[in-house]
Picture (cartoon, rainbow, N blue to C red):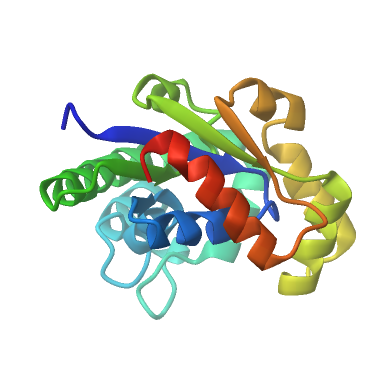
Length: 202
């Protein structure tokens, strides 16, 4: 995989990161969605379910056999150590699956692999394993309005999520390239992605 560019893609909630990932995929990049992989590990039949059952107990598994996300969220708020325990259970499994997908995409001839990782900046591990980092940026006001519109969450809840993520200055400081996705149309965003994609051989 020495000839494959490993590009990290990140941005705060509501930045439009997933849309940019799709545009990069359309340009020929191989996209690996860390969030989707993580969700799959805790879905019905997910590889993390037996481990979560053992670590936290049966009450954290829903009647459908998937992780009871709301119960786990409440537990983590009440016991900060639980977050580290959950991450210690899930993250190694996610890392294994990411490696599997990356190899498959490289073997299929993809020369640019995009690692769509929401918490990239928060993780020293990821920065060391990537050659470039593309940050999708927008104003906090835009973040809040987008997330409220799509999810129905209260403004205060969205602001709390933003506050829990890496700060905007910290994210920008980690970037090799920044795409400002604010006040533009999807068509204009697609043009910007195509332009910046040339830096990455797309």
